[in-house]
Image (cartoon, rainbow, N blue to C red):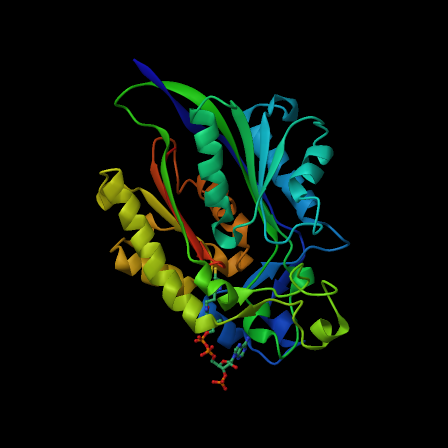
Length: 337
Ligand code: COA
């Protein structure tokens, strides 16, 4: 007796070439390398230049993932595109990526779940593959934050945290004998919209009458993200811990079996506290926030691809992914690579 499962057939990532160090930011706003490193672990991030858009970053990551999987864009049945920084209010970046990949007719689904977006997309893709709707899906997370940050003293709490980048998975249907679980073993998601305003971007807003964005919005800097940093921090640690433990329990897998945990890269102190709460040693946790900052929906696939290329993650390993972000939204997943 065989069953259908979702395997990760290929991964890829792309970050813009332009490196912005903490010192570069400190030259523009009232902050310092020491403050940023001590509070967040971040040393530098990448900023896209010359109008390189979210869809264009996604294209570069997707082509690498396709090459890694040994297939062509024309082999794809669906694009799932997770981002909070789409090229336009509409249409979504998924169709733009489809055009860049030159695959007219292939459906494209946009996922708007911020730092948890990649895991929301993963659950959609996994369910569609296991139910036989599609056989090969490109799942991509990509962000251009740099054009939406308030790089001024007023926006310094958020401006120092975020960076640009993209990461992609090719997910494929595969058959296996019952009882030998492989590929995506499970994804558990959650959301609590009561905290929507703890980390949000207020304008433009279709709920605002008579215009989505006004001079007053701009004067109040409401077109830039706003965050209650301490509240987000506190919820991130406990929610990621609980999401991970909940999924492990549901799948009857023990933490000892996990070869590598990759937490969403929001803040190195958040990752360290999640690691501590799960009592995992350093060699079973992967972080790269020091080089990229928080790349939101791109953070997990960039880190997975890097850890594979660095040999920190190998075929057959049990990978644990966990994320938390604006919404609030969160998620956890276990994948047998
Ligand atoms: N440089 C220098 N000082 C800064 C600063 C910066 N970039 N940003 C804020 N400060 C100042 C504040 O104005 C405050 O000054 P005050 O004490 O004179 O009022 C001081 O630093 C401390 O601010 P506080 O908010 O208490 O710092 P913190 O220890 O909570 O760290 C964050 C701030 C943003 C790093 C932290 O709250 C955080 O990481 N939160 C979660 C963010 C996150 O992960 N978001 C994405 C979720 S997916």
